[in-house]
Image (cartoon, rainbow, N blue to C red):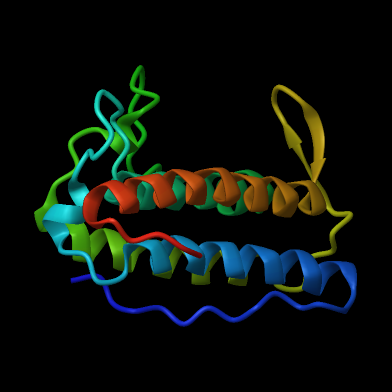
Length: 169
C-alpha cells in the first residue's frame, strides 16, 4: 500500500531559487499524494484504456526524467538509464509489475535526494551543453521539471479517479 504523503506548500514569498525548488518539491509530493492508499495492483492498473498510463508507470517515468535532466545532463554523472531502452521511448510505461511497486516508489524518492544533492550549490545561471539545443541552464531545467510534473499530475488525477473515484488536490 502506498503511504500517505505530507505535502508542504511552496513558498508564497522568497527568491527565485527557493520558489522554483519549492514548486518542484510540492509537485513531486503531489504525485505520491495521488498514489497514497492504493495497492500495488491499483498502482499498476492501466485505468484509461487504450492508454499505457498507470500511476506506477508515471513514477517510473519521472524517476527517469529526474535522473536524465539533473544527474546525467546537467551534472554529467555517468549513471545508467533506469527504464529507457533503445527504440522503446515508452519503456517506463511498459512492463509495469505490481511486485515492483515498493521498489519503484523507493527508487523515485531516492532519486529525488540524489538530484537535490547534484544541484546543491549550483547557480541557476549555470549551463550544460545539450547536444541538440545547445546551452541550457539549471533555471530552465527546474522550470521544465515543474511543467513535467504538472502535466503528469493531471494524468494522475484522472487515473486515480478511474481507479477508486477519489478526486481532489
